[in-house]
Image (cartoon, helix red, strand yellow):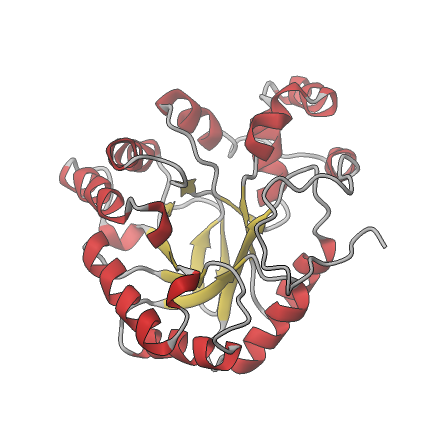
Length: 283
């Protein structure tokens, strides 16, 4: 990996600032992944359900061919979709994703918790995918604390991250504490609250003190918590702006001011199965 902030989990260094590809068309995904790697990002996130894994792989190959990066310097994540949580389905999708990417992913996640099949079957299959060399590491996405703990208890291999929605308008202290207790990490999707942070007076004020935008302040707030952030954009200029957060540091008082922005109605993407409940941070 290149010399940029990373969190080490189970012996693996995961860059704290990544580039997300949710909702990017294949054409845009290919271009933006190549540009992100040129800019300096070394962590790329995709998923089978995004329908752009092949394009992401092409973007990585474009960046390698241009001399911007080597494969060994990239942390590549993809996800198993919920329709493939049975053993055979999971292994088949893991093989398909690796073939579409043209690379073995560094991290394979379960995209959302699901009641059926059992966690035991799905976690067993995820570990089997790792044993078969279809991924270097495994993890979760969108698992509340109780299910996070249950999944790790069923998994012989460390679940190296839990990728969830996190930004200044959400309180995630319980899940972060759970991740630390399990020797894992948190990855934030929608880290910029889908653009809502741009007009936030607190973030604007803090940004002025550092010559930074609200988005840059927010991403810095995340990585100073050792939370991995994967902002997504279709604009090269915005990708460059998002990456320009390594030359300043927020004070403890500024971190606290941003934490204070959290509110009970802050969640933007609640697609969890009704059988599960998010942590009751506001109880």
